[in-house]
Amino acid sequence: MSEFTEPTGQATKPVTTAPADERASRRAVASGTFGTAMEWFDFAVYGTLSATLFPSLFFPSFDDNTAVLASFATFGAGMLARPLGGVVFGVLGDRIGRRNVLMFTLVLMGLASVLIGLLPTYAVAGILAPTLLVTLRFLQGFALGGEASGAQILVVEHAPDDRRGMMGGILAIGSPLAQTMASVVLAGLAAVLSKESFAAWGWRVPFLLGVLLLGAGMFIRRRIEETSAFKESKQRSAVSELPQERALAVLRRRPGTVIKLVLSWAASTGLFWICVTYAVNYMTKELHYANSVTFALLVIANLISVPAAIYGGRLSDRVGRKKTFILGLVMQGVAAGTMFPIMNSMNFAASVAVVALALCGIQATAGTQAAFFSESLPTSMRYTGSALGMTFAGLIFGAPIPFVAAWIFQNTDNGTFALSAIGVGLVLVSIIATVLLPEHSKRALHEDL
Image (cartoon, rainbow, N blue to C red; front, side, top):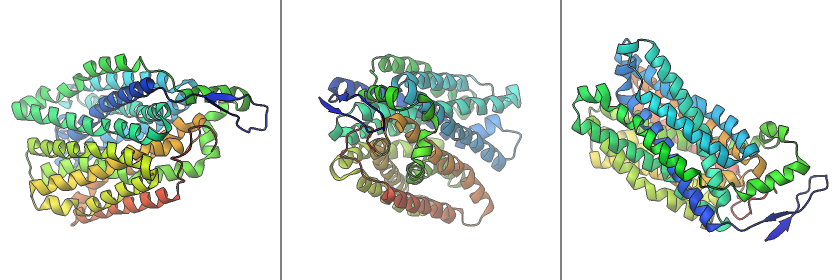
C-alpha cells in the first residue's frame, strides 16, 4: 500500500492506493470485451446492411444513388449521437461510477437493436419506417458513445500498471470479433436464404439476437466492482473539487489534450469505416462481387487483425504508447494508399491482404488507445475526456466517410484516388497529433497530471 496527497491549495487527507486485484482485473476485461463486442456487433451489422440492403428496404422511392446516400446518412446518425452519449455518460461515469453507467449503456444498446429487428419497412409503413430507423440508430450511437470509452476506463483502471496496454489490447479485440461475427452471420444467412427471403426477414435475425447477448452481458457485468481509482478520486473531490465543475473541467483544464486525442484517432476511425462500410458497397456495386464473397472477405480480414490488437497493447507496455500508436498509423497509411488499386485488380487474395493490413494497423492503435487515452487525463475527468476524444473523432472523421465516399464516386472521374488521398491525409494528421501527445505509460493512474 502507498499513500500520497494531491496539492490542491486546501487541506487534504492522504489517500491509499491498493495494488490491482487480479480477479477484478480479469472480470473487468471479460465484461468489457463481451459488452464491447455485443455493441459493436449491432453497430457492424447496421453498417454492412446500410451499404447493401437498407437502401431498397427503407428508401425505395429514391433512385439507386440517392438511396445509397440516404442509407449512409442514417448510418451517420449513429455516429452523430456518439459524442452526445460520450459527454452525457462520461460526465455520469466521472460522477457516479464507471460500472453503473456501463450497465445502462448495455441495456440501451440491446433494446435499440432488438427494435430495429422488429421495424416495418417502407413498403409497410411508408415514411414512418425510415424515421423510426434513424431514431433507433441515434439511440444505438448514443449508447455506444458511453460504452466504448467507459469499458476502456474500467479495464485500464483495474489493470496492473505494467499491463495496462495488454489489458486494453484484449478489450480491443471486441471490435474485430464483433465484425467477424456480424459478417459470419450475414454471410451465412445470405448463403442459405434466397435474396427474397433475406430481404423479407433474414436481415432481422442478427438484430433479434441482441436479446440473448443482452442477457449474457448483464449477467457478466453485474459481477464487476467499481475501480479503486474512481473511489480514490471521489474521496479527494469531497475535499478539493466541486462535483458541479466536472462537466466542464476537461474542456477548461485540458482543451489541448482533448483536441490532440481527437486528431490522433482521426485516421483509425476514418479508415475503419472506409474498410467495413464503403468498401463493402464498392465491391458489391462497382466490382459486382456477390454479397457472400464480400462478407467472406471481411471475415478473413477481421480474423487476421485480431492478434494485432493484443500485440499492440503488449508492445506498448514495453516500448511506449506513442511508438506503437505510430507503427499502427504507418500500416494504415500504406493500406489507404493501395487499397482501391488492389481491389480494382479483382484479385480476391490481394484484396483480403490489403483490407487485413488496414485493419491490423487500426487494431494495433486500438490495442494501445485505451491505455494511451486514459493515461493522458486525470481520474476525475478521464471518462469524459476519453469519450470526447473517441466520439468527436468518429463524428468529424468517421461519420461523413461513407456519405462523402459515395458522393465522390458518383460525381468525380477518379473517386478511388480521391478517397485514397483522404485516407493518407488522415494518417498524416494523426501521426502529428500523436507526436505532440506526452508519453505517460510509466506513471500510476493517480490524479497527478
